[in-house]
Image (cartoon, rainbow, N blue to C red; front, side, top):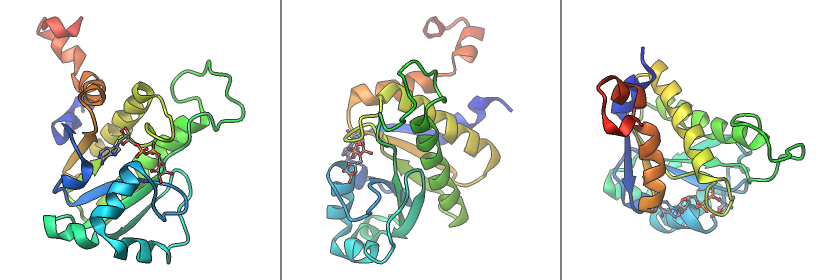
Length: 200
Ligand code: APR
């Protein structure tokens, strides 16, 4: 099956993740799970204080892992669950010298595990749609292009072997961020076959 067979199930949108109505929203959390700024702050504000009270009972979450919680106040807009994942902090690989190709740094592997961990939880809980922010590309400083390539690769690989979730949304905060994802989701080889100008 072509790696693009999954692409019909992937969507890119621009906006505030907490306004979406997918069955699961993914939080870019920290290891404490007790809130923060960025997406984490927005999710906690939108879900309400019950989320923090609940997360205090979870004992945190390690980098690359994910934990599922109720959506609390976000249930009002049809969200069934929140999936909190902790992305890597860019520059954390003690052995990195900056010349590593994609996939050869500790952070690359940890970020890939975030996407896989979230999707495994979503599928296990029968959730049909999941919206991701661009994990680690804000406060955690992960290069956006590199992160998008990792995100799309892991989401495609998972969707090719799993019927659930049926739909994955990449929710970008800006048009510039969305353009990075859209460029990678355009199947160049198919475009090249039909001689489309974008395939250059
Ligand atoms: N909706 C969608 N995307 C958002 C939103 C939002 N409401 N707020 C921020 N973003 C974007 C950022 O522009 C960035 O592209 O989400 C991406 C991730 O940024 P952060 O939220 O800073 O997450 P991250 O880089 O993973 O850092 C996690 O930041 O908020 C703290 O507690 C959190 O310590 C943790 C760290």
